Amino acid sequence: MRLLITGGAGFIGSNFIRYIINKYPDYKITNLDALTYAGNLENLKDFEDNPNYKFVKGDICDRDLVNNLVKDVDIIVHFAAESHVDRSILDSQAFVVTNVIGTQVLLDSAKEFGTRFHHVSTDEVFGSLGPDDPGFNEETPYDPRSPYSASKAASDHLVRAYYHTHNLPITISNCSNNYGPCMFPEKVIPLFITNLFENKKVPLYGDGMNIRDWIHVDDHNRGVDLIIHKGKIGETYCLGGNNELTNKDLTFKILQAVGRGEEMIEHVEDRAGHDKRYAIDFSKIKNELGWEPEISFEDGLKEMVKWYKDNYEWVKNCKSGEYKEYYKRQYNI
Ligand code: NAD
Ligand code: TDX
Image: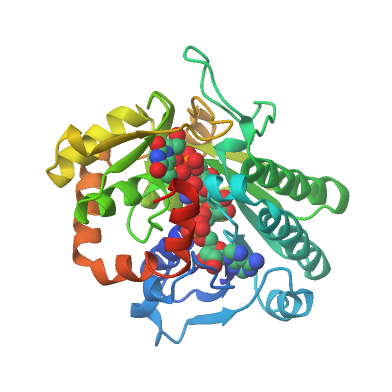
């Protein structure tokens, strides 16, 4: 199989490429990535010389480039996005350009060449749950509330529209919060781990009672693998970690894993429009494709702390330059 993977230099995409190369060594992979602040070729350096792997630096909004690549592949697995909610609050334009227009350019190209298309999306498109609400599932109405989730919702709708209107062979996955190696240290878990390494406090938003459902990136990618091979065309699948935690409890677990105490918590102003709770009912993919998450949060977090310790040069590169500016704007420190 020949795959075009977009956003393969980012967190989930690079772990996906590693997963696919290890599981299907004869598959041919092209990784199209613009190398924004979040893309890092270090994530893939062990595959640089693999003859079945090719990196192309470029923008998914570039029609000619995209057409040139899509004509030679069997499937597009679309990870590329602007992915950080806080950045979308500061400035949403890149989110609309990459997440909406970029997806539309890929869909047009897939339509032209009749190419199978898998769209990697998020549970945030469904909005926010109350404490006793059942988890999101494939029937939950869309209610995105941040510029990031609104742009991802728009892209999901476009993908489905190309299925209904143009008969394009698509699938969509909506997954909860991922964690694991190569995650950019602006997202809460790697930010907190690396701050603690640097003896800096961890900024906990609001009362710390917002809930996220955490899933290891390898569990997510195993789900995407199943969907691209066995998923039903036109269908959406929700994936979750069965692992709801308040941010406060998550912070305690991180402090414990790094060996630091509660005095390292700094309570800061809440995120604007902060969604209260996400949770996923993944019965559909469990019943139809036999998928469920396998990696325990305790094991995954321990492995992640070790990865960040062992790859401190990678962290330092991420936290330099543009990222420092962002941190100054975000937290005024
Ligand atoms: P990331 O920010 O770590 O990586 C995004 C990658 O896309 C980067 O390598 C970046 O260079 C690339 N990119 C950005 N704009 C581009 C453009 N215009 N053209 C080409 N490449 C471009 O993101 P991630 O956390 O790995 O998320 C990957 C996908 O998974 C996204 O679509 C995101 O919405 C979705 N998702 C993420 C999570 C999560 O917890 N991180 C959960 C569910 C779904
Ligand atoms: O410094 C922080 N302090 C804090 O309390 C940061 C960065 C976050 N938080 C809170 C906000 C959220 O309730 O932690 C929770 C998780 O925040 P993020 O790591 O920014 O993730 P989230 O906003 O939940 O979105 C993530 O999951 C869904 C990804 O960034 C998205 O790409 C994905 O779609």
